[in-house]
Amino acid sequence: MLTIATGNKAVAAAAREARPGVVAAYPITPQTEIVEQLATYVTEGSLDAEYIPVESEHSAMAACIGASVAGARTFTATSSHGLLYMHEMLFWAAGARTPVVMANVNRALGPGWNTWAEHTDALAQRDTGWLQVFVGSVQEAYDATLMAFRISEDERVLLPVMVNLDGFTLSHITQSLETVEVGDFIPPYSLPHAIDVSRPRGYGTLTPPEAYYRFRWDIERSMRASREVIRETEQEFARRFGRVYGPTEDYRCDDADVLVVALGTLGKEAEVAVDLLRDEGVKAGSMRLRWLRPFPALDLAGRDVVVIDRDYSFGFGGVIAHSIRSTTRTEPFSVIAGLGGQEVTYDDIARFVRQREAGAESWFGVSD
Amino acid sequence: MFEIRIHSRGGQGGVTAAKLVAQASFHDGKFATAFPFYGAERRGAPVVSFVRISDGPIKVYSQVHAPDMVIVLDASVMDATDVLAGLKDGGPVVINAAEPPEIPGHPVHAVDLTGIALAQNLVVAGSPILNTPVLGALARLGLVSMESAIAAISETFADPRNIEAAKSAYAEVNE
Image (cartoon, rainbow over all chains, first blue to last red):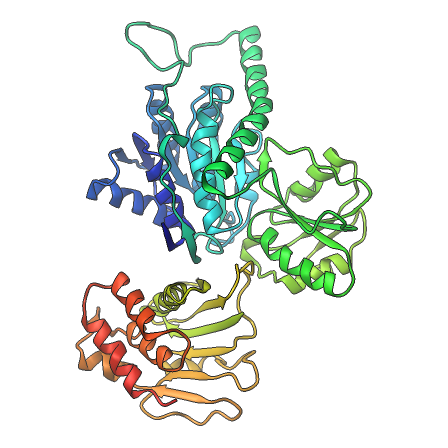
């Protein structure tokens, strides 16, 4: 059905479509609308789930892990400080191989207190064993949430998935949205290692070094296998529902001399900058990075690369710029922009491309 | 692409006004986005929200810096905010006022939204509802069709007085 919705409402609608058995959540701006909407669905009876209004985000993730180990499909949503408060439990969710699906509405971290968009919250979780996808529209927030359940519950994966959408810029924007009847695209699921009283086993017990090491390797093996599961899932989604997704969204990249790489809404805005630059005769393209974990294999050989990081690792640099540098052997021009919701327009992005300097780092509005 | 900036005060429904315009445009078969700029969200503080309407998908997420139209739901924000900032030459100003103020270089469309809301007794938490009547004024100015405006309002609010208020504004706004 074609309708219009905010990013938050789209995520809630997709989560309902997946029929989770347990939703455990704690509100935080700018995510609150997601869990409010899910609570409304449960109250009005359109979602038959146990809604657990926990006392913190740490507890929200702990409840999802527990419910998941008991065999339930689980969903939660958070943002910023809430995500950081979950940090310990994020490792636990991945280590316990619980396919929890979570929406994270990307927001800056205080102090100074700031509720606007930034990606540092999610990027600070990159080593937790979660799959992470970043979306660029309300429609994509919906579609990616649906696909997240299928990917995470695939027995080749059995790892949690985080769907990231920009705070306010996506969470609170109203756009058109086509909802789908998901049918068996998300099949019924049963966790192979679910608690079963007839087959007693130990969970979370002391794990000696050799076994622990093997469990870590199993996570990485599944993370590698998830690339194929993601590809299959996105292909099946396209076949059923007509919308095409991949590890990146490439716009006018084929003959491009210079590529803009960015996450989320900045990656969409970059497409408008590309059109401007093309009108000037600059052969630019936009490669919006969708999947952060597993990190995609990108072929950027022979092109200039401009990476926009809406994040920063102090004493090191932009996380995406360094990820691109280390995986593609290119020397990108690293632009740090949009932190704490800093306004960045397509004109600004076009200027980053015109002023690119391989290997340099520029803080937009400060050092340029 | 047609870009609109809406000025109001927190609690007056400017954010919902933007959503309603987008929703009506959607019913007109257009692509539309609506989004607020949330600052320190205090009741009574000046707030802005934005609408983009296009024949194709909209990829721009940054704020509207050069609007084609400005809507002022509370004329008192003009003391604190330059509502004309970046407004394109000749771009219309739709303003909640009984009499159109003189704004050189811009057509001004005035309508007494507050009076219309009070006449319908459309008041929530002490604030007259301005976002449903303004849809009627915008329909009269051709931004959206009246049919789509009514559809957007009735999908958002159950109270039929909202539609009556929109019809009053449609009749009263100066073209």
